[in-house]
Length: 275
Ligand code: GLN
Image (cartoon, rainbow, N blue to C red):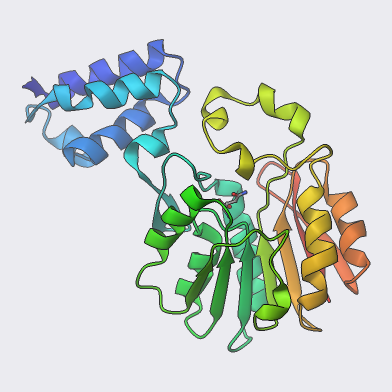
């Protein structure tokens, strides 16, 4: 057993030495997850004894490059918690902007049918399902591994319909016509993948790789899914730094209006189209 104050200092030091960017933030996440001791509790009870051995394996994994979120097994997105782990993309803060902007578009409409394409953990579509109880949300995900997380995350959410299909092959005519299509598809160019951060490389390539020019999924969505969108409906997608112009062009073949929205760092991160 070891005092919480000493073990916390040791954890921060180990993470620092391992070149982890936010060592005290990560140490707090680990302490909360493995010892049930959050920052306030830790500061107010420095003498509290904990079994530091419990953190040995998690720390080893973290220093070996496993993302913190996989070790903890869950992550917050738009103030809800989602289970994550090997085989599913970790929800990102910039994706919260996609949700926020989409919610503005959806609000005021009733009984909306919403499609979340490439749903992964389900963080986007399940957030809509929770916040808009009169909506019906279809979440499409092809990967078996990701789908198992989607299944867990959607349990108990009555207006969520999960579909284990590849959006390249599934037929949108089989489903109700959507009022909204929302997607954060894989958009990294294949040749950029090897240069990603080591933590990101532990996430599924399938969730990151957007093909030779990174735009494969946007093309597919425009050609195959946009025709199913209701007239007066909206599409909103997340995209990479230099892609919004091309995506607006693709969408404008079917949409009457398109626009891009910037993220917190001023990058054009979201493209919206109105049919
Ligand atoms: N929709 C999920 C997310 O935004 C997964 C996206 C993906 O797998 N590309 O986290």
